[in-house]
Image (cartoon, rainbow over all chains, first blue to last red; front, side, top):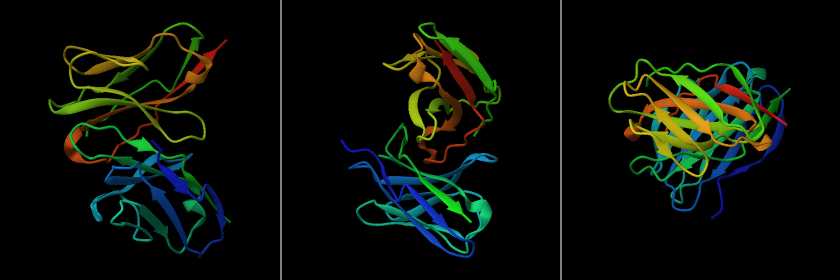
Length: 113
Length: 111
C-alpha cells in the first residue's frame, strides 16, 4: 500500500511569490492534515480536511490556505511568501474513523529567499 | 488537549532497553496518550497509543501509570536506527487529526 505522497519535495521561492504544495493520502484515507515544521517553532498544526471540508484550523495567517478534492488529494497554498515561511511542510492522512494514527509523508521543504 | 513534559534528550546503548518518560499530569479521562517519533528529515511515524492499560506492539511498549499522570515508552532492544526525536502527545481521539507536538525527547542510541 503506497504511503502519503507529497510533491514537490524541495522548492525555492523568493519573497512575495506564492507556492502550492500537493499531498496524496493513503488510498482509502479521507482525512488530510497539514503541519509546518521549523527549527524555532517545531511542529505546528496548520489545518485538517475531511470530505472536501476544512474541519480544523491552526493559528496561522490567512496567507495559508488549503483545499481537498473529491479523491481526497489535498493542496495547500501560501501566498505572499515571507522569509519565515521557510519550513518543512508535512502532510498526514488518516481514515478518520474511531481511534486512529496519522500517517505522515516525507514533507515538502520550502526555502524562501 | 493536555500538555506533556518530556526530557529534552536521552542516550541509550545499542541492544539495551530505552525508557522514555512523559509527564501528562493534567490528562483528563477521555484523553489518549500517543507516541510518535521523527527520524531526521523524515515525517513523524506513529509508534503506539493507549488510554489506561499498558499496550505493546511490534515497535514498543507503553506503560501508563494507574493515575494516568505519566507514561513510559519502552523500546526493548534499541538499535542505531531508533535514534530520533520521540513525541508524547495527549489528545481526545475522536477530536480530529490536530496533534499538538511538544519539543519531544531526542534519543541518541550509541554503539
